[in-house]
Length: 357
Image 1 (cartoon, rainbow, N blue to C red):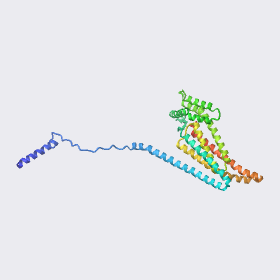
Image 2: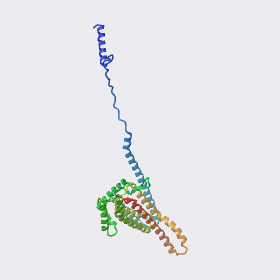
Image 3: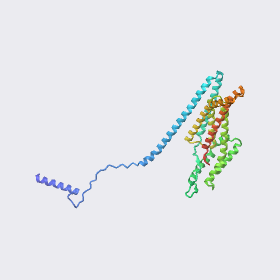
Image 4: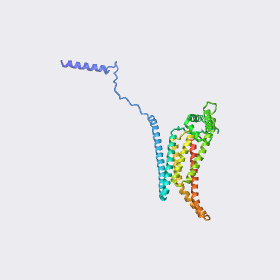
């Protein structure tokens, strides 16, 4: 093939390619060349990510606080019992041998009662349901000076209390415990309270504030009176037991035993258990009372010795010795009874499902 023919053939190929791509051909639009683009990833929604991780963060913070308070409370209780045990060992070392045996037997007996009370309380505690305490909604002030009640808050309070009443009237094990707590005519009184609770669950044309007031007066009112009687009873028991106990450790264990039984009775009476933070705070108050019961003997002995030294000028030697022993123990019993009474009053307010009624 000659050189001219090759040149013509090459020129025709170039013209054909230009014709296909649209170059040098104004009548034909050029073809669009599609370039490959990598798929773009959707933008990250920072708000959605934060909303997804926020419950986990709040739960982890709540668990951290709960663990911190639990460990701190356990350490404080262990320290109190350790110090009381050291004091007990020192006092037992000073006693003759024939008195040490009854002392150790008394400690073993009281410790067994405390462990039994703790086991019974925990078993009954976890058998109950945890209902949130309802606070009576307060009226909101209006711009004109009048007040208006929040209907949504009232209805939510009534819904929670209705669930509580349904649980209380259907729990047979709880009703059996009530029979043990009522002083006399237990079945008649329990039947009256249960009938009132069932009547409140019936659909009636009663507004929510009136319904809550009737619940507080007709159902929770008798329970409050029984709770007050149980609190006074346990306070008297603690006062007597710590007044006749010769060792601070036995005093502390006696307080612990009665505190566990009191908490168990209040939980059974109101049919609900506290949440985790309220339970930790209540256990902290019990630990503080155990410490007070252990240290009360030394404080009362020191204070009464000073008073005895002032007023014992005209009494005989035997009378002064008797008063020097009886007066501190009497003051110790009165103080421990008062502290347990205050503890019971606080526990009653927390166990009651309706607050500020």
